[in-house]
Length: 329
Image (tube, rainbow, N blue to C red; front, side, top):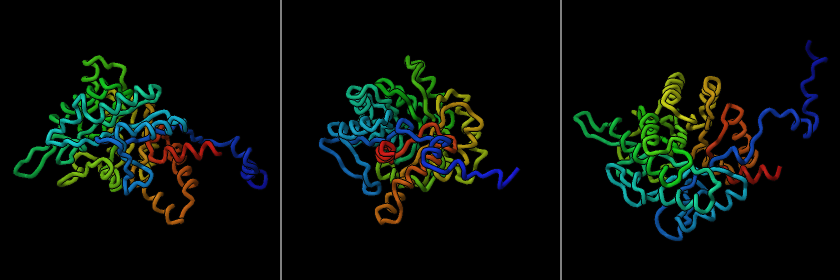
C-alpha cells in the first residue's frame, strides 16, 4: 500500500497534531549545566571564547545557581579553576581546594541540586596533562597506574565535600575500578560514577581549555584520549566501564559522534550522557552574533538531535538559554 492511500503529511497538519505524535521531547531537567569556580572575590568574568559563560568566585556563584534553579535545571557539573598548580595536581585532592569548597557551598545553598564533580588532574597540574608525567629517553609519558591513585584520592575528597556524582574524565585505563574501590572503602558506596567512557582527542575542546586553564604545556592527549576515526574502540571503552561498575556512560564530544551515542544506546542499559562541548557552543554563538543563524532554533534542534540519538542527559553550556526557550514554547 502506497500513495495516495498512505499520506504521511496527514500527521503534520497542525502544531497540536505534530506535538501529539512527537517522538522525542526536550526538557530542562535533561540538562546538566557546567559551572567554573575560581579563587578570589567578586569574580564574574566572561570567558572570551564562550560568550555568556563565566568564571565565578565562591561569593558570586549564587547568581548563576539561582538562575539555573529558577529555570528548572536540576544538576550542575563543577569545574574548579585553582590558583595553585604543581606536577602532581595536589589541589585536586585537597579537602580545602576550590572544587571542594564550591561543592560544599552549593549543597548548603541548594541542597536539591544534583552536583556532579569533574574528576581529572589537568587543570590542577602545571603541565596540563590528566595524570602523572614521567620523562623518559623517548620523551614524556603519562603514568597510568600512578595517576589512578591520585584520581581516587580526588574522588573521595569530592564525595566528602558532598558531591552527588563523581564524573571522571581522565581516560586512564582502570579509572572506574580505582575510583569505585576508593569510594566504597571510604563509605561512599551509594555515590554514583558518571564515567566519561568515550572521550575523543578532539579539536572541539579549545574554548574549554581557556575556561579551565587546562591546555597541555607540551605534546597532546592522543595517548589516552580516543582517535576520532574509531568506533569499535568506543565499544571496548564503554564495555570496560560497565564491567568496572560505572553508573552512567558518556560520549564526549556529542555533535560529531551521534553515531557513537546510538551504538552505546543500542548495547547498554545504563543512563547515557552526551557532552555538548565548548566549541560546539562557541560556533553557534559566533554565528548567531553575526546574524547568520536563528540561535534558538539551531540550539533546540541540536539538543533534540542528541536526545534522539540516545542521550538521556546532556551536559551543555546552552542549558540556561535552552531552558528559557522551552518555557516559551
